[in-house]
Image 1 (cartoon, rainbow, N blue to C red):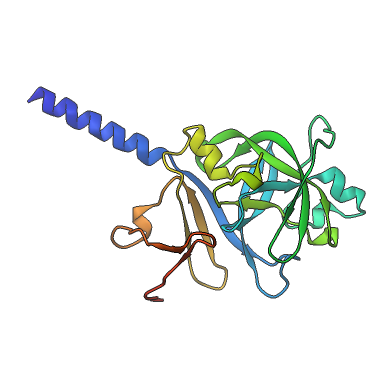
Image 2 (cartoon, rainbow, N blue to C red; image 1 turned 30 degrees about the vertical axis):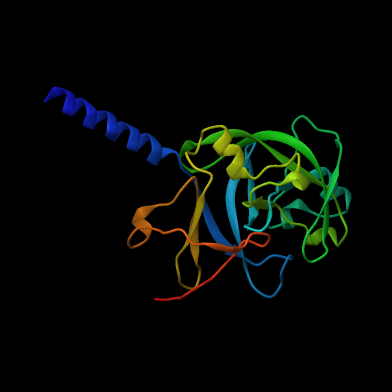
Length: 225
């Protein structure tokens, strides 16, 4: 009987270990200058102790923040930017830049940097991200990005936050889930590394991707309420 107890205990510990390998981030909807028509989902966390709000983007790979030196050099005020700015300490110099173009024609120039990101539950990790050093539009409309899409050869050297956390074995899976609550001020949670069974009824199931380029799926039904 003792080996059964020990086996059960080991299984329990393994399950707990896997279950704990999640990174949770608070989500909220905020009006930004990126889109003046409706609020956008943003995640809140700290980068080297600095408060950051980043646009949750499932269609982009890039993890990048607004470089304070560049933003204020364009006569802007970081205190007025909803996403916040990242300030290098000690001051950093612009490294090799790479230009990324988004679907609406916006172009962002990034250079690589590394810093410590702090998430809910006391989880911290050194991660690579980009700092904005150029933008082809009004600098006041720049944003910070939390890209969740898997990387591709064209996005090198930048990798998504999910890929980086998975590579460091901080999360047990390269999947993520997003939950929102209703109401006048909806909020939610982004979970990197899996999902929270307490937030949905029944097990989640996989759906088939019908367009690998755009990662489209067929929606067979929708229930609200």
